[in-house]
Length: 504
Image 1 (tube, rainbow, N blue to C red):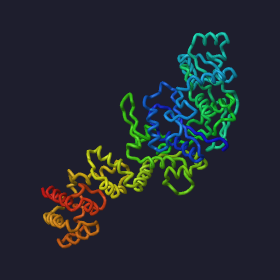
Image 2: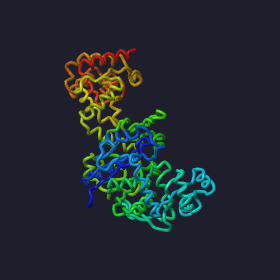
Image 3: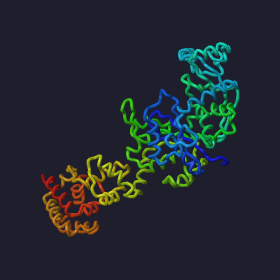
Image 4: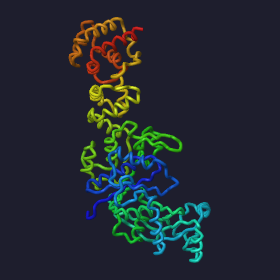
């Protein structure tokens, strides 16, 4: 690669950031890191009708949470700014006018009503080779008529004039040679009536201005590729055109069609990186972060949706991904999203995380549930004891709350049917002797079993009641590990409190 690698993630600030968008950002980031290049965030906010307040900051927050912070962006500009398309607005029209001057584009004065009438008249109407000469544009009007309309500031758009019966082809870094017949391509709008460029013109002008060398984007943009190839050619920049890579779609769990927000709503999983709050309605769409995912697990999962390193390895840190990523290993086929697999990644990352890393998150989750943690060392011990049992970070609340507050209720249905005075006497005796027998889990278990045998019980009959006395239900790590962590005093208090409830 002769030129320094420059890639860009160019989202529109219109709402929540779909995991497909994050994966596009991730693959851009990884490619840049692999080749000592630059990762650019460019905000494509030219569609003012769809612009949503706060969405740009939300996109930046998502990328920061994922650990793939851009090298250049609206908040960290380089020499290629501005990094918001709306701030580049004055520069686009001259290129659209240049295309008209060179015969590659034209003014179109058709009103929305004109276009709607055509759509009703002609099924699947397309503004292009077959219809352009029947419309109200600078190809059908006289020069004087066009000049008068422009002088009167008559609303108009500028459309590309797609050539007839040509074959447009390019090399896609993932798909190889891709070709399109221009007879199937319509005359896309390049500049809208409000003076804003459409994506088609803006993406070409901006990629040229920002010296982008490689353009990664979703497969759904493939049909637009011939327009962009033609624009690079018509503007005289063909030799500077970036190399293209159209990423495979992320598919619904059943493999039929692109994964959407509606699929997540229907099947009960997030498709956004972080919670998105609609500023108009106040509706909150849940994200992976708030559901309890570690960013490392989220990124790991996304990387393997459509890419692998050719081995059986599934757990990758971001540093490993930076080292091993290659375009050659990106699949052409769509990747089915599997939420159970996503949770598996998260479980693996939680299990392997240190208590120190998890501490602040777990402490905050507990605080949100009105559980105060005063001793961080104790909390770390608890985290190490229970993290293997947590698939989501939010699981730490249920799995650890009983370490900080005595159970308010018990699973009495699991105990009372077989509860006897003899069992009550056993636990009373066991509680009395705890001071001598709670130095470690092994000796605590041996003392428990010895007393059970002495009192004529099988230890298995007593283990479940003991667990429920300590934690309130049939869950948690080893019961003697819990008791040792509580200490003799707290364990005795919980046994005595539970006996009173079970005896009632």
